[in-house]
Length: 335
Image (tube, rainbow, N blue to C red; front, top):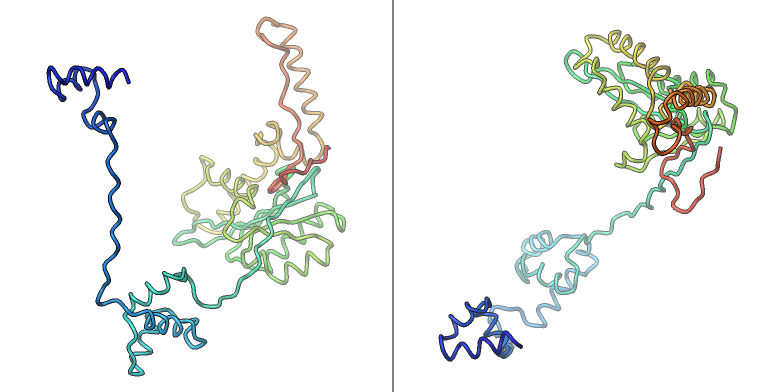
């Protein structure tokens, strides 16, 4: 109100534009504050001489809803009626009629598949849940070789791997059987998780797992986040400084993997494991390794306590339960 009064007083002397400039107010704001504009009268739409009558629109909608054309798109209805010597309306008019009743969408009767269940796996010890996947390795001319990798999601330990020239359910079945036998997995102990690739979802693999008493789990379609452990392991593999741009032969790929996987299991300090190696966690050496780290840090603290301002140093905690799609309200079991 003070600003309006000042503008009004100055307007008499210097005019509206100069008065608004003096107080720092746009003229449009000043005029808008003086009084709002009267609402514009609503205009009734004028009738279109080319528009269909109510009866014609009703007839066209009945045709579109008929059993004959209920699954057909408007262009198909238009062309079919033309071939029969009938013209009711243009294609765009058909669409306008459907839009008026909120039917501009998929009109066909299509099968609706039930939604895929989100996998939820928890591992509190080794050999409780495995994840496996297949990745391609570039050969001399094209993607020629396939690397099969099975890892334990609790320890990140590679329990089995294989390089082959093809993606095959038979090869996957053999690798899974050998890995389960080598790890001494009992019946009804293990869950194996994979995506929905042809080898992973094949009947031979499903029959094998059923015979061995192993539960199988699958990712949802087009959802790589449902298999994060295998994806992360493949990234570690392919971002190694010595990973070749392409392999000269299948034997070359095998030789590289024979070096990489022992390093990954026995020497790689994994950030998700408190910087322990997968082998230490898988074979129960994690507590012993952490105890040694505590001894080393205790000696360091005793020698120079002034270097540790807040508290005595501690090594990273032991890894806790690992999961795929952690349930929102479920409390994870302790080790």
